[in-house]
Length: 450
Image 1 (tube, one colour):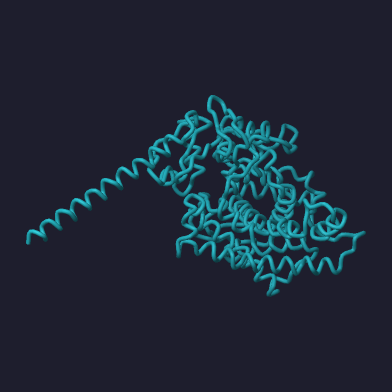
Image 2: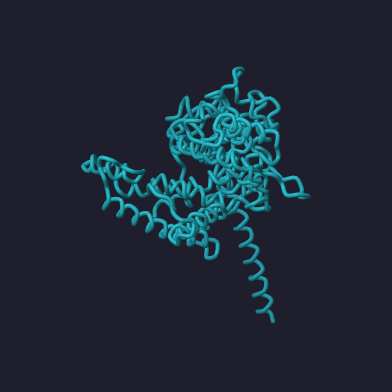
């Protein structure tokens, strides 16, 4: 009996000691993390939790929360993403200073486990336009990369499109791994990585087949497409190691992964805003009728269609598909305002804050394409506080191609159809859903032939 009581007391004491140890251990870790934090980093907003940081406060629309915090904390502040400090730059002055004026100091990329993992290896009836836009844009990219379009029933094309969409979906679902990298080793949680690996291999196999076919049929004097140009360049620089066949494949891969998702979402926003603003849609159609008539819209018409171009720009201002851009990192110690940022610190550029800044865009929540036109009705070529493709050294390399594809697809659709909401349907929502890119909620519209 006495032995039992003694054992019980020892057990309770052991549990107490264990609890005490765990409390002190956690406190010690938090203290170490605090002391490691550079002294003159920009301030934290309120709502920072242990371990989670500001993840709860940021919620499902972080670009909106960061823009709200800007009004309270200024253009430069720090958020805690899990266990990591991330400096957020808001507003045209701060973002331009980092991305354009001193781009060499912010040109590094922080580690991103998911993306590193990827690159290391109708007739008037209501319809959801997402699927049709995805396959159309994928085929446009195929035409650019491979010099030919696929039949929409082609099995290889269908499997390619499926693989691209699954990878984009899994990258969006697996963002938590970037915040807590150790989760990539946890069974169940790392399913996103397994799916990405599986479909990544399928896309790589498809692209290597295309490279092999192009190499066999290569006409060096008359390159037909992107892959031909890459192969010709490879032969010219065969002794130079900075451009390889592997890199040509990776560039083509990025065409698909980046292009399909971003262009699809941008076009979804375009059609959504045409339904919400039928007067703007009529103005675009009137301009197309006057300039293009019954011909097929071409890039040669672009300069003659300023209102159409301005409408695309206003959609990208209101709903940029990358409202926070891609993360940057400082290449060396740098001062931003009164704050000292150490080398290697992660940087987020809140592009949404640029596009909704009333100092540059009066009444920024109002959809108005004419804000991109000058007094003569011409498109303002380089408007300030407008960076839908980011800027500086890390500007999106596909910017010009994306602009051309968006113009051709948007003008062709508006030339041939009027887009409306189904009879009796509720007003469509323009609230975005931020995954890899900012997407509109699923919706159905009617395409009425003109």
